[in-house]
Image (tube, rainbow, N blue to C red; front, side, top):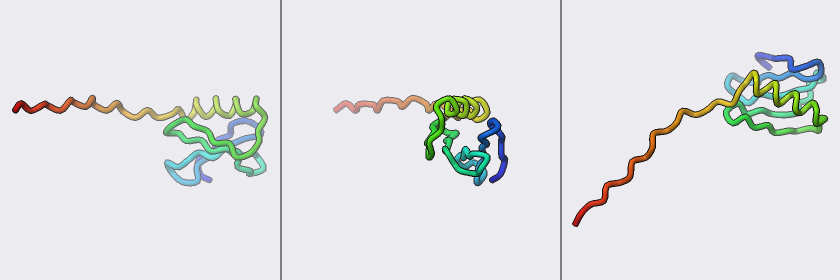
Length: 83
């Protein structure tokens, strides 16, 4: 796992490939969650205490905030043809 970051004494995170999903693991190397940096969504794979979930989610949102897509230009209405 590259770019391994320590969240606290029990959890760390990292990516298996550049730009990929961020995996949250225990110090025993069990993957407990996946974090999607594009959406800010978490997918939990193992049970984690509620207070630890909050700590992990807050840490990830601070260090890897969800990326906002640039706003798309408003679609222009189609011109009605006169007949």
